[in-house]
Each structure stands twice: as structure tokens, then as C-alpha cells.
Amino acid sequence: MTAAEEDKLIARNPCRIKGADNEQTPERPVLTVAQVFELADRMADRRFKALVLLATFASLRWGEAIALRRTGIDLEGRVVRVREQLLELDDGGMRLSPLKSRAARRTVSIPSAIVAALADHLAEFVDVADDAFLFLGKRGGFLRGGNFRRKARWADALKEMGIQGLHFHNLRHTGNTLAAQSGASLADHRIADALSARVKAEQTKREKRDDDGSLRTAPAG
Image (cartoon, helix red, strand yellow):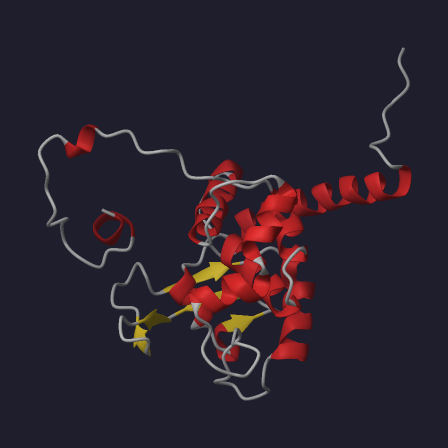
């Protein structure tokens, strides 16, 4: 159903089982803005901080995120152009392929609050060539899901945060949910601005906690 309804890769779901549509599936985990930033900060390899932020706030699938190139991100215009995906094949190979549907090929606005982290990532981890990939493994190879989870210590980060059942693809769902709460789609700069304001508000709260040990409260009366 994801391939048919969400990713638009096929016209209809060929797997039809009578009564299967009555099954109650568990609700997908959704992070708060503060949790997204905390998770990004907890990545054991710093090259993955920007990956978590961008996958969430640009609502990217795994294959789309790891296929991004330097030319696909415009920090001044605050947009990401999604045109390709990297597929991990059953034989262990990786295949780069264009996104076929018009809906999949898209330009997404990003909040200004994550621009600095993306700029730092570009300066430290990305080759200067226009076609350089944004997210590669430490040795310069294509990033695989298993390697990412291991190097980022994904499971450890979630355990430390007290979060269960969160997968990388839930970051995209989180981004869509945060955008919907702001009132429109992620393609709209106004929504990116609203998300940015929300991020900054959460960051201010975190800074107050760090300074005071707890949030300041107004005196009673």
C-alpha cells in the first residue's frame, strides 16, 4: 500500500487478502521537534546529524536522502531538490535511479533553523564537486542502512532517549506530521518558516534548562 498510495510506484496494490483491510496496525512513532534535535545530536558519528535533520524537515525517504548531491541543496534559497534515489539490491549492490513520478520529483523548502547544521556538514564532509553526494560512509562509499545504524549507534541513541520502535522512515512521517500541524505542505516556504520558529522556541527552552537546571516559571499571583 505504501508503494501504491504514498510512493506512487505502482498503480494499485496487487496483494489483496479478504478481510486484511480490517487489521489494526500500530500507530507510527512521531517525534517532537526537541526530540528530533536531540536524536541528531546523539548520533555517534557527527556526519549523520545533518542526515537526521534533513530527512525529518525535508520529509525524505532513506533512498532519496542518501542520493542527494551538492547541487540538490540550496542553502541560500532554503530548498532541497529531490530527483534521484539509491536502491540497495538483494545482491548487496547499490543502484542509482531517477524518481519516475512527478509527485516523487519535488522541491522541498527547509527551515532556516537547520541551515547552519547543513552548512557545517557541507564544509566538513562533502567534496567540493557539484555532483558530490551529501551523505557517504566514512570511507567514501554509498551509505547502507545497516552501516548507518551501526555507526550512528541508532539503537543506543533511542534507548538513551527512552524511545521505542522508531525507524529511520519514521523521520519522514514526523516531518509530514509537523508540517501538517503548521497548516500546509512542506513545499511551502511559510510552513518551513513556521517550523523554524517552532524549532527556535524549543531550542530556547533547552538553553534555559541548561542554564537553570529547569524551566523558569512566572511567580504565582
